[in-house]
Length: 91
Image 1 (cartoon, one colour):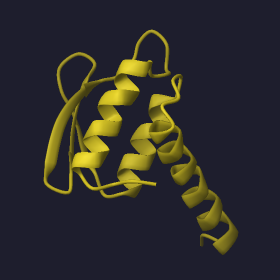
Image 2 (image 1 turned 90 degrees about the horizontal axis):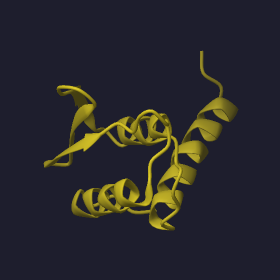
Image 3 (image 1 turned 180 degrees about the horizontal axis):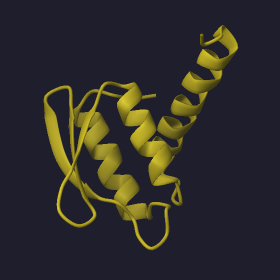
């Protein structure tokens, strides 16, 4: 059973990631972005190589998982921000 405190902490983490994207921060862990996207109902499927297909609120995009580092760069954060705006997700 999930407690209310666990649920609040989980939601706060997703909101923190969303806020970081809109504050144009870099070096956001890709795993945090994927977790946040799933929280908002995104469908995430694997593509070839490091490609990830994401569908959210009728909007589709393809991103590349960062490698060898696990954090995103500024360009990926900017692309994710545009995707989220198009999918009508804002902090």
